[in-house]
Length: 609
Ligand code: AGP
Image (cartoon, rainbow, N blue to C red; front, side, top):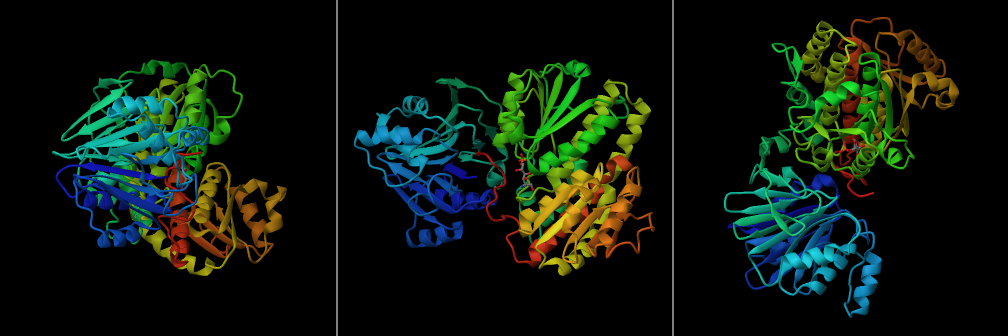
């Protein structure tokens, strides 16, 4: 989505803002702009294209000053062009915005009748004009009045012509974070943008306003000043850079051992023989979890695949009824009340609007809501009844990888936690499973270089194919879906994940000598059935690409390609089988010369519908 940066402090604002905007590029954008106050007036430079294009323009028109706002735009209203780019200026107000104003057309008509002229097609210009229309000098009063007329989502940062010492931010349904520096203050859509400057943040909650004047700030809600604690994150700037890898995505694939290790560390004490899954929660009565009768898992995209994987764990180990649902479908269902239901919302960004709105609906239906998110202080984290964080660190590549396996880790631990309080597993059984989980980072560490070599080589054979099938059964079905999503979203090759048992019900018609078919065939309870699916593909000249356990040699001559994956206990196989699929997608996309970290049409966090 759009990216916002604001700065007030002793440095050259243009340098801080451009540098920070570059760390928001992963959010996907089509134009960029900046506004700087030089003590006398505000200068704006904005244009369609990349930040590097903006920098060229700035070289021709230097922008001195210590106050400014910047923006990367992902078009929602109005096509990508210089006029529709942000910042927008109307009268004495200059503003950048992330979100969608649903009633902007009606407000535009009202303001046009008052003689105000518009130049862009954006809802953002309407916000700016409305604020300027009411502005008599008190920006707080003005904002409260204008915001009362706006319907929709907005995170804004604004400055005024009168003051080179005032920076204002506000948020509703779109993220905005205050960065607290040493004698300098920042606004940003996301924390990684500011890591080189500060690690001290205050995420704004919905309908909160922040007024920065000089070196001071105050946060307000409904016109009253409120106190909010500063969150200190330990993401050092380097971890948000590429660390020597060609793409963030490859770096993040290789980071998975550390991400999983950091996530599971400290969640269980063998000394106390107890879990500390919810250490970030201090005001929820966890005993309520003993009485839940059902679990609903709700998310989008890759996070949904993590939910689908955990369904098998909750059913087989915690022995509880489980339902999974795509968030954009869940929120429009006519659900009965959800008393006795634990509704789990999984989201890397913690800002995905469909998942957030689904959670708000579940709360109204009286579910206990649990957020599993990767971004500290994100909206889903703050609004859920309970929250558990993955500790994957900033995930910059649009294609989610380390967040996915970290989500699996939290969901598996949650399964063990519920199994313990529901007495469906003995403490010894819980500890045995947890011990197996603790081995996963090392197993991936020892395997991933081999997988990378194998998939890099394999990718050479598939750069010109138009379509792939990914097949898996039981726990491997969600991994088949995830492998297909990885391939399609970064290589633009159509790929479909399918339950292997469904082949006879349609997809088998697709099989011919131009159809690569990835088949996940670990040993275990559905292995024999999966072998028959391999035969179905081979007998129709399909290009079978088989992944099986390294202790199994039975399939060595049963596929066009056969790869061995470390053998681990059956419930935890998803952690390992997803690794080569992430790498295969990466290498195909990379060899096709595509923008792996920022695939076309995609954004890292879908905060508008
Ligand atoms: C995954 O590779 C995609 N980028 C996308 O499907 C993503 O998983 C989905 O948008 C959900 O995002 P979230 O986890 O931040 O809610």
